[in-house]
Image (cartoon, rainbow, N blue to C red):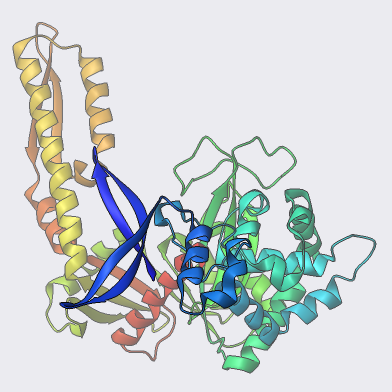
Amino acid sequence: MYLRKISRKYKDKQYDYWALVESCPTARGSRQRVVAYLGELPEEVRLGVRQVAAPDAAAQQGALFERPKPQWVEVDFAGIRVERCRKFGGPWLGLQLIRTLGLDEFLARELPQGQEQIPWALMALVLVLARLCDPSSELHLAEHGYEELALEDLLGVPADKVNEDRLYRALDQLLPRKEALEQHLRDRLGELFGLEYDLLLYDVTSTYFEGEAKANAQAQRGYSRDHRPDCKQVCLALVVRRCGMPVGYELVAGNRTDVTTVTEIVETMEKRYGKADRIWVMDRGMVSEANLKWRREGDRRYVVGTPKGQLKQFERELLEEHWDTVREGIDVKLCPRPDGVETFVLCRSDQRREKERAIHQRFEQRLETELEKLAKSCRQQPQDPLRLAQRVGRLLGQSTRAAGLFKVELGQEAAGGATLTWSKRPERQRWHELAEGCYLLRSNVTDWTAVEFWTTYVLADRCPRAHRG
């Protein structure tokens, strides 16, 4: 005998019933006969009936009166959910990397345990692993992030002991050991990977505060890369190797311009790691004649970008042929100076040309449309000359990329109304078309090819990526 499920559908709902069935031999062969209709049965009753109906049922009569151990159960997939799911692989791998770098030993040595419940070295590891696996604020880590990672199992720090106060105090403990930590990582990474320090990349970014930050003297209002000029900020100056691995960083006041930080950062890195024959790579925001002269006088080599305005000095070279191709769409040309002190490198990019051309055309069309509207309004009705001049100045200020392409003249009629005439400057248009997609590099390295200069300069893009990482 065995159980058979009988399904019936009524008003779009399915009902399952059970019947006890046995096989009976007949003249026409084996046939099935319903012994009893059992109706709806819970799982444990069905298992008991099945065991009783089995051939060895005499040995299992007690199963009718005992709760049998289920052999299988039905699962409602709609009711399945996963609880307390935590990320394990990332934290485990990060912990292995920390041990390989000897960072756990360094923290245990530099952050000795006092009377705190959780050692500062352990809390520092929590911060490092959380930053590696799920970059977020300390508040998010305390409220949500720690429970999502398997750090409690790996480090043995209970979740109720991880709160924002303890995390922030751990950062306070780490800050005085910043230079020692950077030196330890530099030495250990050098042993593991043989990193070179002949080329250093430098860049500056910023981070802002929502509050007033009165206790932080470095929190000031300045040029905001986050487009939040209403908030105070601090600037983060970062130095990385050619591979993108950070060498060190310094915090500077939020109202300092990039160019004013160069001397301080270079001297700080030289004091910390020694003054070696290395090359500094920086973008054009770090360039001033004063700090370039300081670097040359100190025998410090550099490869830097230059302001767009300096391209005008190389108009003849831009018109000439004989460019070297770095790769498809990128051409470079070496322009050594007669004094032999510096070398300039012209670079031309097809993709950059298309981008700048589209920007120039958009600003040019918008400015032309607005100037024509102002000229038409002057012809239709008298305009106040002063107000018209203000509107023209505001319009040109909003379209600085195209303002030089137009010659705008304001006049005054005998009746007192203002006049406006404008025309395009074809010589400026030709220069814009020639300079689109071009930029200029500058260096006091004199024995490189143009391709080597360009290849080295584009490494500077690794600084912003290190900031984001």
